[in-house]
Image 1 (cartoon, rainbow, N blue to C red):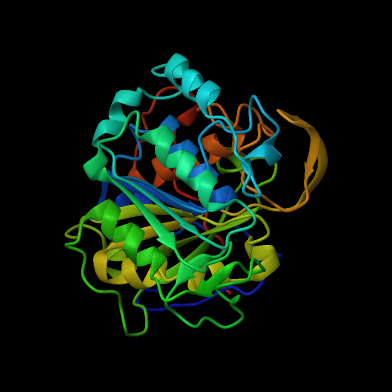
Image 2 (cartoon, rainbow, N blue to C red; image 1 turned 30 degrees about the vertical axis):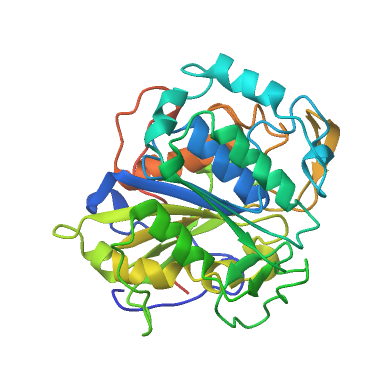
Length: 355
């Protein structure tokens, strides 16, 4: 399997789970865990980085996302479309939850934070991303925070690669990935892990994108049955190489069932992961036609978004369904099997047989 790089164009069907060597046997540095995400994935990345700051010790990155807890005490649409949501109550909530519903905010002083937004973003908006920066400035060290403005960029994940089927940089359209002359994946990883990272790979990748069953403790309403993880060859071998772990979260409508492997491949995360021994976890959402109570009323998840509006529990607390599922995946990969509470690892990720 080492050195074999393959893509899945459709979800795995009619395949039984198989037991591969557990990623928990590999040498994953538990202090190297980080997360980044775009749009709803950006909102989720901020939720994970704040609520689970003791787990995501290398920090978090947000592409085209907004303030933590933005949609709880005001309609979630206020946190979109270049509106001006209030962050006063979200700030008060953060302070009241610190050390209970979320990890201690004191941890954020040592965490790296990266935020990026485009000036032509008409879905979330540059000003809303700036409010996240303002909110976090109450807790983070200014030297650990970076805000990047992409002039002329719409609501897209920015790259400097010409991926097949990508959007135009100035258009907010599927698959929301575009060549904007800016290597977003590389820049966020360099910020989170330091400029000592090796240049990204210019050769065929050494590792494999592995599909696994996103069910059981790794599942939740609104999450697909299959998710993916990229494992560089050196991290498959284990032992001598201390690998890092990064979680990359797509935006609404960007799930694998809808756009295939574009987020897994065209964003460029794997190119940096390959040369820097970074395992990249790609959780996946799915369309959910069910109606659920949210902080903004009863809604369905027709766009397959990661939850930041209280749709599946208290989404920005550690008890939120999407939050718990992703954290269980992370804890399993880094080998935290004895974590108390609902995050007890129950063995290896249930990998799906290769096609």
